[in-house]
Each structure stands twice: as structure tokens, then as C-alpha cells.
Image (cartoon, rainbow, N blue to C red; front, side, top):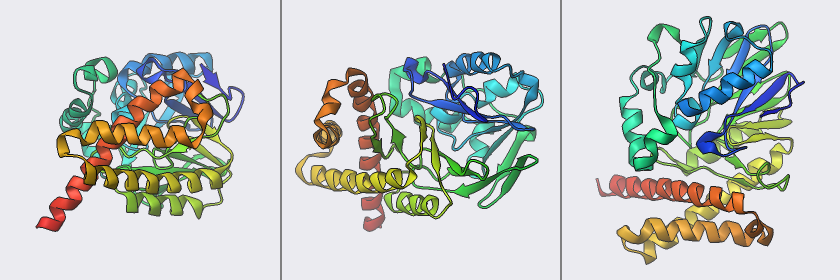
Length: 315
């Protein structure tokens, strides 16, 4: 499925986890044709089909940008690169090594997803070192005569995360920095929630990254999950608000529950907070299924953050 087919920037639905409007790849149709994010390897056939439907050959692709190296954004990068002879992978300096040697990345994901890992992410194809381009904070990439991308270091969701500002559209490809946009699943109803997945979530860094995005001349946000929002101020305000709610909820659960019961309790409490914010959310079964998974993964990241913080204080 393709959104914004005729526009300069189109979205290919990657059917991540076989769910529509879950994860998207952005295709920027400039002289140097650029793709932003690939999702995991099982999504690559959807990406290839989308490119074919857009009449784009694999030889045309010059840049494959990954906002960060989590597998639902970059897990398919190596597999896609094998099919794109003229392309390079563009990645944050802290993520490049994991694309070349993805063993630790895979081990971490197996801890989170368990027996579902192979179905969701296999295979992870290593990326050759000589086909990687590293971009640091404030670095630029010209992809057309009047089209430049600027890369901004935006930690918080992960330390290997950058967001990419497109001057021509005044939009930012935010990966997971600006959270998750559930609007497509909810039929246009707006809901923006942070993604606090393990194991590098840092609420202070995430707020600082949101502030950085807010300082840009911003008219739209291109979400990894999923689609485009043309209300960037609301996105940034809402996600900042929910970060505080998530943290307060996690602290309360940690006070009330023993460690072994914190994950189910926090998952339930986060879901309850979201659903109480708008009773209409309870009527969308597809959304409720996504929320179950997302709040569990976010709860894992919140618990991991608090555990790391306690360990620091004890040293």
C-alpha cells in the first residue's frame, strides 16, 4: 500500500508484524533517490513491491537512511542493500558498527521478543563496511539541486538515533524520537505516544530531543510509526506530556509492586492511562491490539531505565 503516491515524498506501508499502517518507508523522489527506514527483513518484499508500483528501479536508489538501528527500522537494511547496487546505507555514528556486526543487536531483540523473533525479524543481513556512510550532528546531504537533508543527533529513544530535517518540505523524519502516531489506525483521530522501549531509553534526553525538533522551522513530522502529521506543535507537546505520565506511572508501580510483578502491572497501568484519556479508543479493536504490544515494550523500557538509575546511585 502506498500513501501520497503522486507527491515528492511517498510512504510505502511495510506491514511490520503483518499489521497495516504500523511502520513505513519514506521514498524521497530527488536526483539521488533516497529511502528513509526499511523496517525488518520480512517487510522488504513489501518495500520492493512499493518501489515497483512507483516505477522506481533498484538501480535508481542512492541512499538508504536508517533513523536508528532498532530492527523495526533498520533490520532489513542489509537485505535491501544487496538488491540496490548503487546505494549506500546512511547511519548514526553510534549505530554503524551494529550494522556491520549485528550479533549483539540480534541478541538484544531476542531478549525482548523471545520465540517471536524469527517470525518478526529474520534474517539480519550484515552491511559491508564500505557501503556505510556515517552522518554526525548537523551534517548535511544534498540529494537534489534544491533539496538538502540535515541530520540531528536526537537521543532518548536510543543513543544511536538521528532525525533528518528536509528543508524543502519543512518536515522531519523523526524515527521514534517524536513517538508513535496512531492516527492512521484510528481513522484520523489524533493520538501521539512516546516510545520508551529498552534498553537505552532516557527521558531527559528524549525531552531535549523534542525541544530540538521544536526549534526547527517545522510544518510536518514524518513518523516511523506511522505516517505524516501536519500539527508538529501538538505532537511535541503531547509526547512530552505523556513522557511525564509514563514516568510517574512507572515510579508508582515500582513503589507498589515487587520486581517480578512490575512488568504486567505497569503494562496494565499504561494502557489504562491511555484509554482513560479518550473513551472512544476502546471501540477500535485493531488499535487495542497495537496498544497491548506497545505498552508492554514501553513498560520494559521504563523498568530498565529505573533499574539502571538505581544501579548508578548504588555505585
